[in-house]
Image (cartoon, rainbow, N blue to C red; front, side):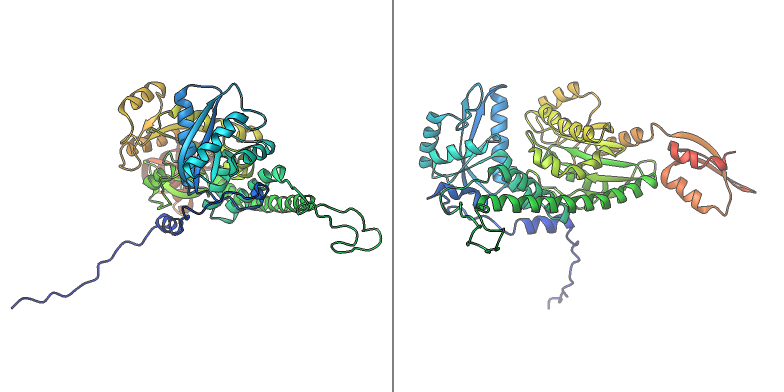
Length: 472
């Protein structure tokens, strides 16, 4: 007779916030194969951006062939992140982009043949096109044409989750769309004056506004309202940041190129459980978590939005309040993708945007620590070259945990570089001072005496000033 076994439920760990966000983001998939070829190309900017089967187009004006290939590969990754299927990519060598059609009229007709051969319904250009270039190219290829800026804005619109993030993306989209509104024919030239429309009576009749003028006015009104909302949210963010500054807790900001592993590093340092996805711009809303240094003192880590080459100026302006977290930090962890074929270009692109943000506030950037991530999958030759080119960098793998201990030690060293030694005697009834000392400094020795605790410690300079009354 066999012994009966009773079934006992196994306690599974609860999903993290990042896992729930990833499941939600993956729950909807774009349908492949629905044609968006335009019967009337004039509809293009009044339709939602819907990317499906795309052909990429680049113009090679400077740099090496490898740099051009890298830029187009990044554009392909952006398109796939937005939900597209990349069918083909073409690059044209020119001194400068054609002012009429971006690639020239002859190449535009060749591009039309590529579109027909592949069955593509969208063309994505690796650059920011003027409204005239978009219009002229669409008339030749007869499918929807968008540029790199519109593509990035589409990704941001998909990934924004917080109220502030959604408002920032909406503002950036409207700033991009406003100069690109255009109208054709009677349908978009309707006038609301005279007896048409509301018939406002004496003094209000006349030519009135055209449809496109009404659209522009409404967009400007909406932009003004969004700016007011963002300013109000910025005040709340500044208030929280001010509270952290008054508590003297060091602030460490994690910044870097998109998909370099910033969120993975935050999880490795704090067990935050934030969303991690192998996609560009997976994180748009800054995440702040509390951690602890090797010497026991508290520290605040903030994960920020990633950067990319040729980041649209509209996004930099809209996300300026968020990026100011970087300027006010005590230490900047600049995460670099060690598996990228051209990490030096990533570093230059990130520093360019950070300088713009710091210059707008007349601030200097905080101390920077370069962190080369993905060392477990990077090319050993590239890593060897980076160790020579970046002598002060720390090489880690946020996925495996390699190098994290060294990174913690370097952070502790940099954040405590300006600390001073103090020798104080704290009365026994001032437990609050003793608690602050342990939270914000490092206690070297402590001896209990008749009138209090005699302590030798190393603390930040502002804390040392607050402890002067207890000096021995």
